[in-house]
Image (cartoon, rainbow, N blue to C red):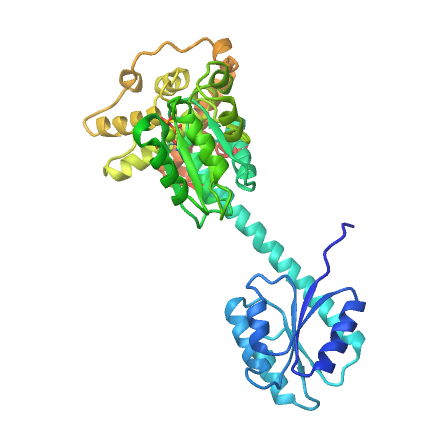
Length: 436
Ligand SMILES: Nc1ncnc2c1ncn2[C@@H]1O[C@H](COP(=O)(O)OP(=O)(O)OP(=O)(O)O)[C@@H](O)[C@H]1O
Ligand SMILES: [Mg+2]
């Protein structure tokens, strides 16, 4: 078993002897006690996410134990509070339990009873906090899946990288071609970090005139205190400005200087070797690196993203999303996408608008581009089987969306027996409930 930190116990009692003896016993029993003479003092010291147990006397001058219970409950209904009541004070004990106390102990009580009760309460508290943490992480994860959509392995890895980097305070360099989602990632890093309450200030490094660079830099850095400074197009920072940047980073030591997130569409190796950024600046910015893959390396995500963008554009323009033919899907998957996700999003919107006037052929909307050979772009050539599967999956998803999850209608439209449809949905991890 892993060694866990001792459970903190806040002991609130106006009688010093009582406080001291309970503290001593708690200490001996392996807890981490802290004594408070008044309810007011305890209320000030115990934070909302207190990882322990509050043990309070009821009758005290000023705020009494029941009032303390109410005040703590208003902050966190699940914080365990144990009341120490006078002998025979049954009505008080009943009131406390109704008000949400974890339990009460009648004085005089046996020390063993007390430590058993505190241990139970402490373990319950630990579970409550652990569950809250898991729920929060799940919510953050699914929020990230909405703004950084995609089911390809490279996108799943990317989301994991983003969450890992968000948990750190190191500077991050985000690399990827234009339109791959670097700005989205910078926002997600900020939103999921401990600095989320602080500002996110963006500075476009390609548009920094030398004359005003010094003032601009220090103003921006000052504004970003307690938050993040996002240096977009960092490799285009004019050479004369770079020493100022290094100096500014070095001088920012007081207060809570910003975490620096930087983005570039250049390859990191070329940034340094090509002399675009000074080494001492580059290494300060690239504490961690996130590589955002180009759209052409994301396989079937092209179809998934097209569907997503087309349905939201359809909603916006009060139109219906175009249904893709096999040829359309093939054209989307084979395209080189030099403008990446941004280009795909624009195309989806154009397709929706065009579909208002009549059937669209996607390949006619695509500007001719020569897809780079697979070896050159770093992607694997895809076997025919994968193309066919991707297309099948998309057709089933589209039909489910059109029929709002009605299996019977989808069976009819695609002329599939129920069993075959079920098997395919299971194989492609398609869940009917997503379309109802
Ligand atoms: N995985 C994704 N899922 C959904 N939308 C995305 C995804 N990636 C990018 N987008 C959308 O694509 C568009 C381009 O993304 P973004 O502006 O972040 O790209 P960028 O890499 O910063 O581009 P540039 O280098 O031109 O600044 C935005 O509208 C963004 O919301
Ligand atoms: Mg950008």
